[in-house]
Length: 637
View 1 (cartoon, rainbow, N blue to C red):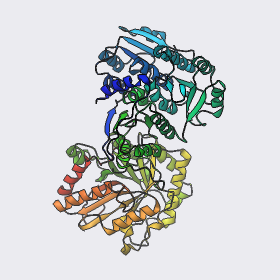
View 2 (cartoon, helix red, strand yellow):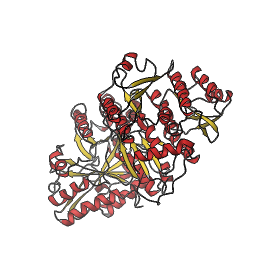
View 3 (tube, rainbow, N blue to C red):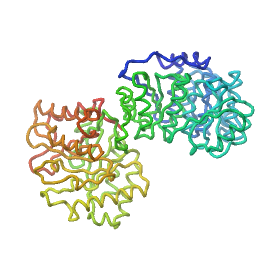
View 4 (cartoon, helix red, strand yellow):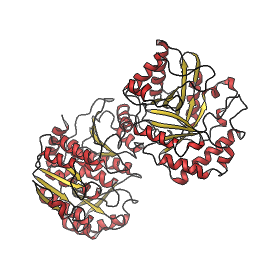
């Protein structure tokens, strides 16, 4: 069944509000994933509208593209009209929305919002269609006016389990109202808004006029104070609060409630970005098409344990997922994490380390390289492979922290590569004692201001190349830990959220012949993950006993592993197979029970810094490397 035809089926079924549950799918079945997105929020809304209405529609609801309030309370109105929701700026309807209106053949437009939202001049500028407006004297008044219009169109408040029902969410932040918009659209249930600490007068008047028997309140006390719940109860209706400790938990609580009561179906879900409402404004009609709940990611780098757990609990039942938003809003790694949980029934393990920027979905692995002396990988790798590296390792001096380093990282992010930057620092003691704080802050601000996650290593391979007692700085392991501890403290002081801090040690450090102890360099809670640089001078693969020891050690530390540099000898089919085996072992590391999960592998495709000859990938290895860039297990931003 197409999304559009399912829209009609759900709309008809919802005439009586309750929807019968579909038969379960086979446990472990692959979830059918559809993405509806565009380069902008306006394009996403237009794509959703034309996808759900391939034969057109005579009525369209238009809301402001930069305001969530009217867009989300419009959900039950669009549901009652069986109409799509399009977005527009406040001063002029843009070309994308005009083209969508033309393609849909719309004859009527309902604007949601007063003249501070859409001016009279704007409304008068729309030619060729009848334009009406639903508005109140404030944001809360507009929500009340929309509720009145929904009841006028449908004839009565919908009767859900608990009686005639109205939904209520905060008008100050979007996530909880977004979670409410799906059931609001499906059941044509009015959605009112409240201030966090007190019911606005317009909302009180609406509740008195609508006289619901039940008000379902979305969000915990931090979003909507208990005083508001008491105010609602004093007006007569019962109050049911759907909430969790986070926005993602509130969304799953709402999903659980409305699937359990039968308003929403169990075999489908809608996934959106949970920290930015841009593309989310178009999600309610998609939820209506599927009869499905809206689930949120924590942000663009992390799906959240709440959402993963919900997907895992639907293992064997969930058959369809629609992602609303492009890959910038909802990266493929988040989608992969959702479908992996649903296919494997794998809920998050409380013992798993906390996620961090750029953490890929289990079952996927970043695959990339360091190329020459920070060389451009386009000609050597990306043109032959037809896709970009998903991870790029680069190296910098401390005096390059302001210009060259952030520029290279920005270039990587612009084409979809995760930047993993290593920087050699001033003396470790000067880093640790605060002398270099201003320079550390410059580096961190430069990286945190980029449009995507960055992995940062401060002085990689600190053990040095001179044997057991020759680290790169006289301060030794304690000095290196202290320097990185200072970097972490500055990250926390600045509130960075784009940077993951990693240690990188030599693979040789785990070899008993090295005489080294990796525990001397590791500090619990300091790093987001551990990086390893393993090489194999003799022909053969990298899946050695030392590698097994590294993974077991990392699991004991409660962390995950990424490979910052790898190299192996050999230029034949056996060497190519070693590359494929190396990749497959990493991609399967989340479930093999052999140690810590492996999250990234970067080849050292360079002739630099080797006493035993170039580590540039020879032809057989290079061919295998390129083929794996297109493998679906390769993690992508």
